[in-house]
Length: 110
Image (cartoon, rainbow, N blue to C red):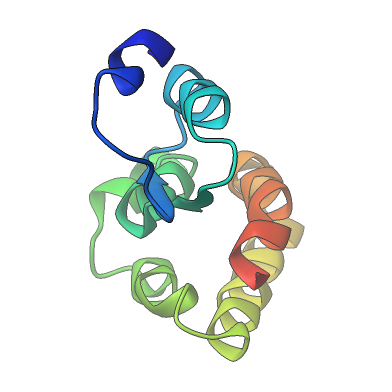
């Protein structure tokens, strides 16, 4: 990846990635001064993929609506987290989704 990125002219001020390890590491090495951002669509998809399968398939479930807007403000993120915590407390099937939210909390808040 570093070799490929090195063939491009110049150095960007910022780079948006899907969060994949090879791309993130390549960008860090090729363009250490570039500001790194995570693609909002991929981040949302990574979080939704951790929902229980019944929720993944039901796009009318309120979790999808909360997640859709969660990255727009801390208030929206907190509303999503509150609904998710409530569900996780009542059903162990939400543990993976709650763990993913904890993992990405700092990233989303910044």
